[in-house]
Length: 112
Image (cartoon, rainbow, N blue to C red):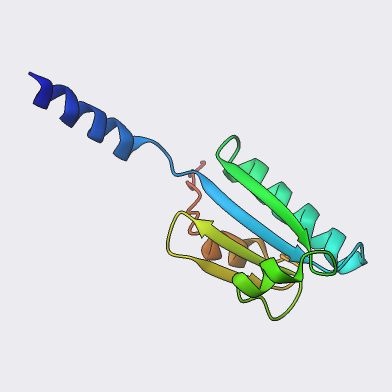
């Protein structure tokens, strides 16, 4: 009987939506940085509500962490989880590019 419960738990875990761990690297409070933060938060709130953690990291204050994530430009968004790891560079204003980079596929509803 324990086996049956174990299978149910695994099936439930497979149906559970993925949690996202994101790091957004910015350079201070420049307009480009602020814009990138706003864009990422808006998209995540809309498509990943309650399922994401966004860490905003200022390159001026935490360069060693940027080296670990191999960040070479700012703003850069790093999707650490779920795998595969991905990096997006820019102000994150292109929502379709941001969604594709995060592997988010919004449900499209057809209306008459």
